[in-house]
Each structure stands twice: as structure tokens, then as C-alpha cells.
Image 1: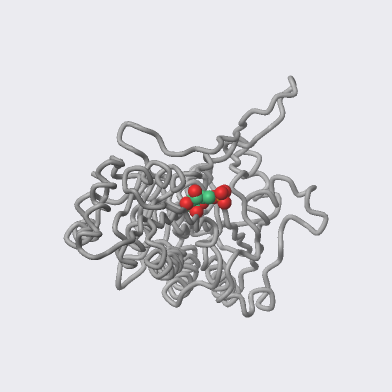
Image 2: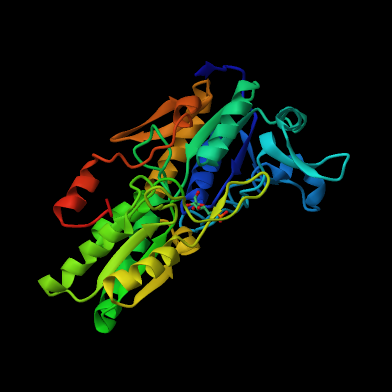
Length: 371
Ligand code: F6P
């Protein structure tokens, strides 16, 4: 954790990776707090692209953030700055002399662009990828404060990330709705939710929504065990089933369902639910249908919980800069918000511990993990 006491006049904010409800609330809190300290605020468009490729933005790659610009945005989903999953400055897709694309480390050029634009500090809103980049920029001398965002809740060193509560609440609502139609048709409904490497959304919504099975990346599943568990249900008078699947779920000895892997971005997953439905159908003797909630989980207004922690995180990020901190992430540690080194927060992914209380509760309630 560095200590930088030089005066701040102008700060930048950016949003990177997949959007999450609460981004705009953080932006508003940062801007209002910073302006009240006499600092100027600008937003970088689309991750770092507004600084890396200003020529792509006829209206300017930086947006001046005034009170007017952030008025009334606390409850809005998305991000007024735009975001991208494909703009990692450390692995920037660049055309080589041979005409082929390759990944180039452009972090020095990016730091130079910060200096050229008189930006004294950065508040970076992101998940593990974006905050890993923020950590590298801080190592290169940029004053950086990270704010933990991701609907997946897979960032370490914070009890929760903003956006997760909305994703779980909406997934639970969808699961609730599927019970009656599954019951009416005596079907198995397989519900696929986001969660690439961590099954938090599937676990929390599956338990809250009374699923019969929950399949998460942390617990490779045996489809025969899932089927055996579902075949028990009719004996107890339940003639339908709900299976909640994280997109990164994988069978024992198998791999997650990867759709594509492109240069400069994380692999794209898809098809986990469909694969499970197809494999289950002959084993349970019931029709199995799939619903993919996907990006719906990232949409809509943040819940009250997400809004509140977003506002708290944004204000805390500005306080951190005022206190001379850098290279840290604001983190929820109830009842307070504290600061943790960015390197600790991005060192490992926070996956679901197999002995955590929610997993034990699910097992106590008879929910199968297919293991
Ligand atoms: O990282 C958050 C996340 O929501 C993952 O669960 C999901 O795999 C990914 O984003 C999807 O991102 P994209 O919009 O690039 O497909």
C-alpha cells in the first residue's frame, strides 16, 4: 500500500469488463465526493479505450463528469462510461508487421497518456481482470484505487462485490417462476446462470429458489448422480425438478462448455445447461428443457443493497485518495469498508468453499450437487 501525498487536482474513473448493476451509483459517489474536495473528474470511455485510442472517439475519449452528468443515475443499470471485455492494455490486440494480430503490453503508453491528460489518479471499477490491470498500473507509478465489481462475486478480500445481489435476486425470481410451469408439464427445467469459474450465483439462487440440484464449477458433477437424485423426487410426490447450472459447470473428468477463445479477451462459455439437459433426459425419463438467463442477470436497476454498497465504495475510494493511499481496493468488511492491497484482491479467485455454510445448508435440504 503506497502513500502518495502530492496534491490531487484531476482524477479519472473507468469501468472495465462485464457491466454490473451499481456501476453508475459508484460513479456518482466518486464524482460528487471528489467535486466537493475541489477535484476535477473525468470518465474514460470503454475501459481504457478512450485513452488508448482517442482517435476512435470524435466526441473525445474522456468525458468531463460534472454534478449534472451524474444526476439521477444511482438507480440505473449499465455504465454511462461504457465498458469492454476486450481492451486489456497489457494484452492489447495489435497488428504485427506480418499482418497477424498478437497481444502487446501497452501499459507504458497508457501511463504516459494519463500523464499527458494531467490525470493525477484513477478510480478503477472492475472485476479480477480489470483490477489486475489496475494493480499493474499502480506498480508503474499511477495512483490507483480499485472498486470491486462483478455479478459473479468471485473477487477475493471483500465479503461481496456490487452487482451480485441483483443477479442473485433476479435469478431467484426466475427460478420461482419456473416451478409452476415445470410442475404443470412434469418437466425438468435446467436453468443456466452466469458464473464462469465460481458458482456463487447458482448456489445462492438455487438454494433460495428451492432447486433440486445445483451444479457449480467447484464441484464437478456426475450426471448419473444428478439423475439418481431427481428420480427420488416422484417418490416424495414431486413430479418435476429444477436444476440450476453455473455456465462454468463441468462433468467429472470433463471440461466446461467453451464457445470461443479470442485474442485479448477471456474465453466465452455457453451450452452448459443444454448439455446437461440432453444428458439427463434419457436418464430421468422426463422432458428436460433449458432456460439460459445469461446477460439478463446483468440488466436492470441495482437492488437497494447493491446501491448502498456502491455509494459507500465510491465515497470510500475518494477518501482513500485523500488519505494518500494507492494500489488498494475498497472492500466490504461489515459493518465497515476497508482497504486491501490490489495484489491480494487479485491474487486468487474467490470460488465457493466446499465446506461453506450455504453448501452444507443445501445438502441438509436434500439438494444434489451431482457428487
Ligand atoms: O465476469 C462476469 C460475467 O458475467 C461472467 O459470468 C460471464 O461469463 C461473462 O461476464 C460474460 O461476459 P460477456 O458479456 O463478455 O459475454
